[in-house]
Image (cartoon, rainbow, N blue to C red; front, side, top):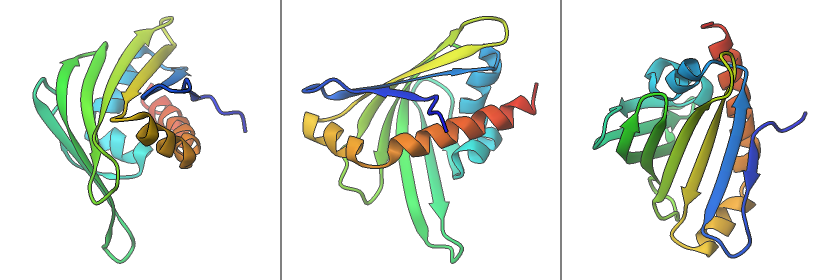
Length: 155
């Protein structure tokens, strides 16, 4: 399967650049990132909190069938401009990762297509390189494919 979500990382840099074009109007792509019910579907996690505003916060959690928490993450929303951008931190609970800073930019390409660009900045080059060794690229591509499928149903 072709990976539509592109990830680029320059050697010696503390950032990853993620881009993905969707066959969705800009407003629907943005909605997929800010509506808890939609986020839960494409990310496969429970949204405990999602305050879509400047100085808001968010918290996601995933449990296994026995009710044990297997993933928990949270952050602060530093800037929120509907259909344009979200700037937020990302921190995993009980992990060896330092918090990350994410710049999500939403762009209209045509009336029916849009693009997201996510710049993620890490504490160090080593933290960024460790992230790149994990299978997050495949997982992100699969999640974005689900986003496209789920939001297509809202058209």
